[in-house]
Length: 243
Image 1 (cartoon, one colour):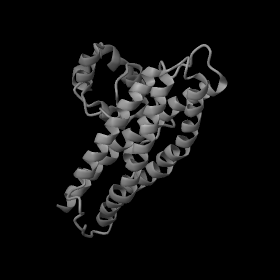
Image 2: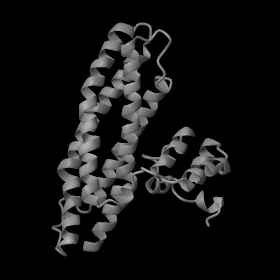
Image 3: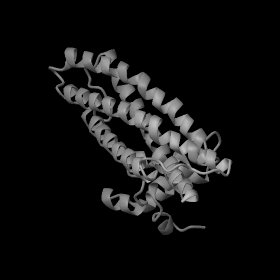
């Protein structure tokens, strides 16, 4: 059995990839498990001033529980994971963005004078909406099709035509950098919204908008985690079979 000291040397993304329920513990301590999942637990605890023993005891409690209905994304074939990300998370983003932009515009008109932070929240989300649309198209048109080619070639013992981008690590590096930008934007949005807690004078639209933003961030965290901590490392590993 691994000691707590040894476990804290593992990367955060490894814990979450093995059991997504551990993400709740990292979120509780405000530790980024998706965009910065490549840090060790030790590093994150040192930076945040967190008692690593307390955190690891909470992690171990979760890991020792019956997983029940927890989805084991790590065991999925890469082409299935790609389809899932596109159909679930990309579609979610596409569906929610126009609704949230409409609500945020309304909040700025009605409540902006009393709550000027709404203007910055709206600006941040609008920038995120534009960048996410471009980001997802690059994945859908360039990166994801190549990953599917790798999977197909392995299944059929075939060859892979060298892509124009050189190696899969190049677009992956770009995607991870863009993920980091989105993670930073939503950290700012979370701070400006008091962790999505509406003010005392909030109307129903205000409350609904903040709840939707919180849900959007939660979905984005899972979306980025699936790519950064599972899909991308496995795609890089798969490509080495053809080098």
